[in-house]
Length: 189
Image (cartoon, rainbow, N blue to C red; front, side, top):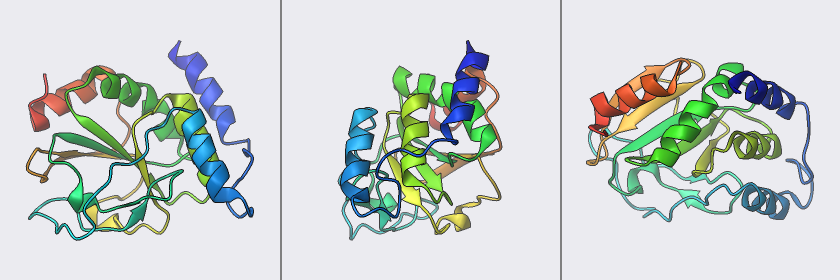
C-alpha cells in the first residue's frame, strides 16, 4: 500500500495544475485548488504577536493556496507538529503517509511549511494527493532557516507554551517513530 502511494506521489511533481505560479489567475486558481483537495486554510493569527523565548518567530508568511498572512508567533498555543517539506523532495514524499495518519489521529495541531519550493500549484497538488489536509504556510525564500533547516525534511515539535521543544532532521521512518517523538516532546499519547 505504501509503495503504491509513493509511486503515485512520484508522478505528482511531473504535472502542472491550472493556475500555476506566474499565470494571471494564479491566486484565485490556487485557492480553488487548495479547497478542491480539502486542505485547510491557515488560522487567523495576531500580526503583532511577538515570539516567545525559544519559540517560533514573528513572521508574515503567506498561507499556501490562500491570501492569508500568518504570524507563526501568533499561532494558537497548543501542542503542534511543524513539518518543513517541498514537493520536489523525495524523502518528504516518503514520510507523508506518517504525517497524514498522525494529523488525523489528533492530540496535536499540524502545520506544514512549504520550504524553498517554486511552484505553489504542484505543492498544493502534492499535499492534496498525500492527504495532508492541515494548513501549510509558504517559505519560498528560506526565512525560517534560522530554525535549523539544513535540508528537507525537518520536523519541529512546539509545546503548548509556544516553545520549540524538539527537532527531527531527516525523513520520518514510520508512524510509530512520529508517535514516539510526539509523546516524548509533546506528551501526546
